[in-house]
Length: 63
Image 1 (spheres, rainbow, N blue to C red):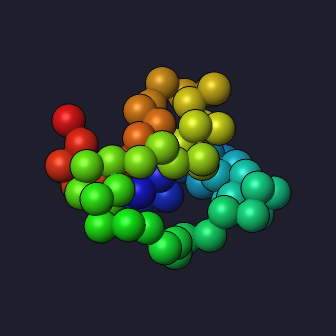
Image 2: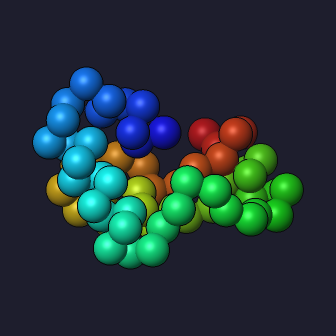
């Protein structure tokens, strides 16, 4: 999601990629159905929230 948002901005996309590698965060994960539907706190979004105003929760029906 973050990479799609900043795909045209090289420095930001590189920063996100490096941040994912440094924090051992991959593009795939295992989650409970309830978490995917109603939301869960994403560790990568939580880190990015420190420098960019973004919601640190992700869910299909969140908000």
